[in-house]
Length: 223
Ligand SMILES: [Ca+2]
Image (cartoon, rainbow, N blue to C red):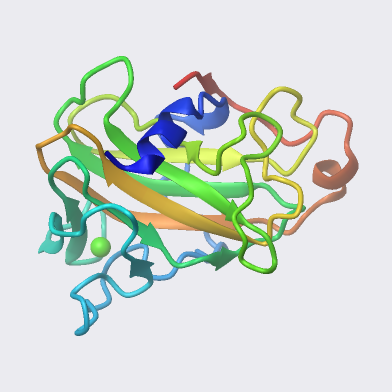
C-alpha cells in the first residue's frame, strides 16, 4: 500500500475550494505555470508519460493519454488514469509565495463513492532547494487534498490557496518555492479523465500581503 495513502488521508485539511468553477480556465492575461496541463504535448519517447509529468511511488501502468477533451476545450488529448494505485506527479513548478495560488482543471468520472472521493488530486510543496515541506499551518503532511466536485461526466474544479492570514485554513507553507500537482487513484477501478489543469497566480497585492482580512475565500468544503 503506498505510503502516501496514509499521508493523504491524514491530511484532513481545509481548503478554499469552489466545486463549480466560476473561472473554469485561466482568465485572460493569466498564464498557467503548470507545464502541459492540457496534455497536448506528445508523450515522452523514453517512458510514454506526458511531458512535464513524472512517475511517483504509484504505478503508471494505468496512466495514458487518450483522445478527447473537456466541454469547450480546444485540445484533442486528455489524461486517463485507471486502476487503484495508479498516479502521476507534475514536475516542480516555481511559485510566488506571497500570492494566492489558483489550481483549476477538469475531471471526468462516474460518481465516486462518498463521503470521501477515492480520486486524489492535490498539491505538494517544496522549498528553494527542492526539499519537501510539510503542509502549511494546518496538517503536518506534504499533501493538500483538493476535493473533486461530485457528479458524473466532465466537471470543472477550482481551488484557491492563499499565502497567509487565513486563520485555521490551509495556506501556502512558509518557505515554499515550488509546488507539485499530484493525481492518483486509491481503490477505484473505473477510468478517470483529466484535462486543462492549470496553476495561476496574480501579482501579489498589498491586500494579499498585509491586509487584515486576507484574500477572498469563497467557499469551504471539509474533505
Ligand atoms: Ca487537452
